[in-house]
Image 1 (cartoon, helix red, strand yellow):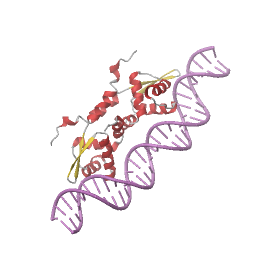
Image 2: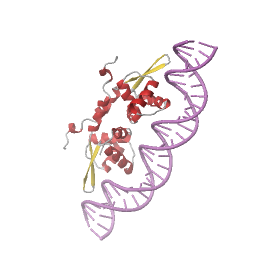
Image 3: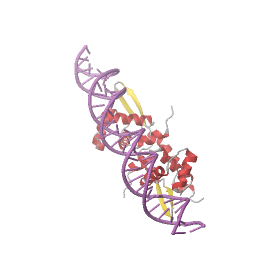
Image 4: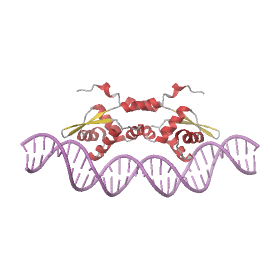
Length: 100
Length: 100
DNA sequence: TTGACAGGCAAGTGATGACTTGCCTATGGT
DNA sequence: ACCATAGGCAAGTCATCACTTGCCTGTCAA
């Protein structure tokens, strides 16, 4: 199962999904309903449960979120490791010798 | 003039724009026509001049590319500084103390 | 000054993406 | 057994995005 780099960038393109990552950074292992509530209270985003669920699917497909089932709860965990590839891909602008 | 973080992510969401950043990483200060040619040869992307031009607009709006006019040429320069905010925003997953 | 080259502007089209709506499954408490 | 809770599935809508098409502006060389 390949995790295309493209998926990571597309996942980060949406403000709601970035807010979800923020929430998971603040408190890892939340359920869908918890994330819904906190999106509303902390970010002023009135998203439906379905909308949030779909966003989480995208984040999971990008490898930024991993899920763990436990009874009727599904906990979402943050995984920031795919983010490293971003800054590694385009090195610091000044570090490559400007003139040529 | 504020450069919304959102613009950086949206700019990175497109494969063609990422290829443009790759090309500018490889060789900074290229013109529109140069970038068009190199997109085709190096990335197999058969993009129109207009398409590439619009992509460069997006990258410039995101602060990832700065332009410099010289006669009838317009040189595009890479600026990777906005990328730092990405990895800083979501710290390494293991580094935040897992339990709480 | 004429024409080739480098680039810009703007309306239109097709596809992708975010979100909704309605209904369904499964787990756990009482 | 029953019902509330936690979540999933799928079709449909609407907006955004990438890209095209056609024409226009500005610069340089002959």
